[in-house]
Image: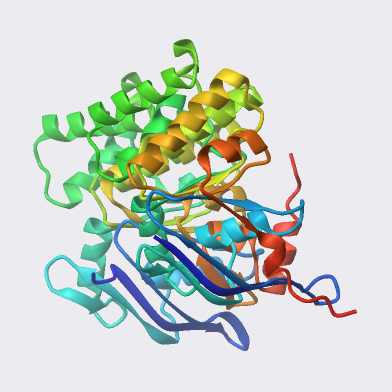
Length: 227
Length: 256
């Protein structure tokens, strides 16, 4: 489902003396449907960078990133948008929403965008928010004022609302208590069971052991340092 | 799929000065494109060229018309272009006063656009006007008030209602949230997003507010001194800017 070959990335800082910082070289990764791969490596090794490149958020310098037949590294914006709508989900570390939009609508949005009826989308959103222990009294409020843990759970509910064939998870269990962590891991297991290809970053070793089939150390993709 | 709007090599000079130079892009149905850049970078010049309000020196602006398919709006006759302006295009000005008739009631402002495309039944026009005022969150009991009696945020929402009532396919917006306080901005953005999704609108939004484009635009075009220096997915351009100018622009935003 996700095939990465010979991927490289360089950051060029034009306003700081045009410093070119190579951060990744020859990255390769293959994730089959139903597979969950954990990206590991020290902080700054490039886990999030790789994940953002798969999502098309960072531009690849070279190589190919095939997700469900689309090469994200070279695709047109609208093809990437269609991919994100229908194929590739992403649960980021932080929730970013339009102010004033109620929580329920935030969670329903990916479903509405793919043409699910609003009644059905509402049911699915309510079910997820309930499972993630977001009190019903908060559903009609905007999540911008929620606590960090609540925002993270709203973010997860939104990420899992639509059954994406491929999912990217950036520390989905961070800042969650034991019960909610267990719910999130169950959601990941359910996604795997329906055939989703998952790439995740988990700092929590137990979580990694429970849901991941393989680990890929991104330090292996670090470019050779020129002394 | 045919692009709704196909822009080829549009250049506009003001004497020796460059307004905008060699701009080309395709806009597809349902897409919102943001145009950012500092003041004087040619954003508004470009928007006016695309919307038929300013004649570019060179280039083509091809619009996929309902009746005849793709047509170059720069070479079509003035009546044809005006017809497009009444039916398929909408232009939301930065200052609501430029887009409204200040001496006519709020309902009249909305209804006038319906009459321009042939609506004649007063009851229907009024019903539709009230419906649209509701959509932009203006209470029905304000329908007979003039826009002069409205706050700046309400005037801007009224301008949006007046523009969208005819069901346009392409909306040009020049700093739609400029000069509004942040709570009104948020409300307006939420409203615009909902309208774009529900009506399948395409839009070109000119702004210098990067937060606005992040929430509203699918794609982004960055202009500097009349040239397009970078284009791409909105979040990609903002999170991983490639051009020096974009990097400067993104890193200059004050954190709240």
